[in-house]
Image (cartoon, rainbow, N blue to C red; front, side, top):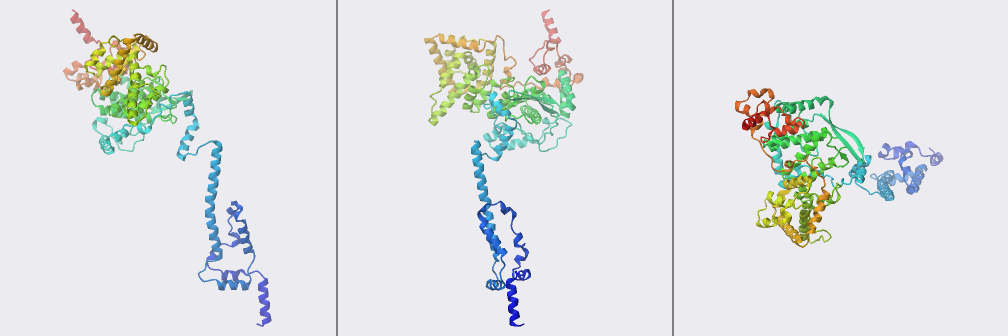
Length: 626
């Protein structure tokens, strides 16, 4: 080729755009896999700010202006063999910038979110708290309840203190409690009904009790219906499933006949029938089998809790379960028995939480939770909570007028003063424990005589104190107050066995005697207060049995319980001695109790000292009269 023709070809190549085939041959192999430069731009980069606009324009200018042949050849000769292409460097640079961009965008978003929350006066909270808060705000029942029902906050239940097992672990340690629970979870013959096969499974988790693995699955025989919403409170009622409604009729028939075998047959087929479980719980309690009785009560609570309505929760405090509905009564009875069982085991903190739950179910307090909640607060050392409860709880009368609260508040103040002395703080703005105890004795002087007899207090100084006219001739004033004093002494007498409380009571009693010597009109003033606070001429608390608040449980010998373990038609098969002790007339309800509750009659019939005046005794009375 001539030099003139060669020069012409080179000029044409310089003027013409670069041939793509030549560019592909000269580019490294890594760029072959990459898409063309024009299509490599990410469309999401358009959402970024304008900080990189100039750099993007420079890149576009580089792409649009092709290099000449000599420039390409010169650049290729200068590049080392291991050099990274310029396009990769720029892409890495862009990637580094893109990695930094989300953090800046995130910080901007957080700043904007913070400014929005500040404008709305809303605090930032964790996701879990916001979830719970949204659940509460969905119905707004809790907020309305707190505005209309002032007892919600003071009766708020702590779920970690609700189970007795948790308190036992804090007292004795996890190893001891776990070994005990392992022995308990091994089903024994006394806990099983004959003819029922137990299969281990993972039971449902509940708030009140921890069900063992050998319990059968819940049979869904109970439900809870939502009745109405009134004054910010949701009212509920238990109901039996229509498919098992006949079970209650079978139980009523077995109870009327005093046939425990028939009740056991009901539990064999329907192991979670509440009233049948409570019946055997009472039977085990009077037989001295307290653990079996506690298991039956916990099994009843497990079934009743599984039937809770989705809106019913003891942690929210916007519920009411009226005792007037017959289907709700087993829940109150089971909770009260469970509370006493926890107290017997020494789990006073758990008993306090259950008592708070029981008191919040019905504002009428049908089981008398007000007469033992202060006792559990003192035993669990919740002194500040007790004072707060006495101030905030809404009741017809001031709580400090009740015998139990008047003395318990003085005891709580005594222990708070002792703790304050050790910590170096003072309570000068509040009444002292001696003053509170003095007021309690002036308001209820009859309590002192009963405490000295029940505790008992054997110091000779108490004899001199009780000889005083004010304490020696003290009278209750009304049947309601006398009944309340009897309940208080039966429930709280064990507190007065502590020497420091005996000294407090003695000091206050001596101050009362000295003050009455100077001015006797003070006793008349307190008598007027007592008469005005408890002015009813009838016993308003007659439905509360004093024995229900006692720690002692009467037991029955097995021969007294055997007549009730057979049906009325099987009495003739029993030995002659037992047949004489439990004849057909004993299995038949006498005429004197025809209008009473059959359940109460059945439980009373288990006691050997109860006499209904049957025909056998009537005949003996006639013979004695002749």
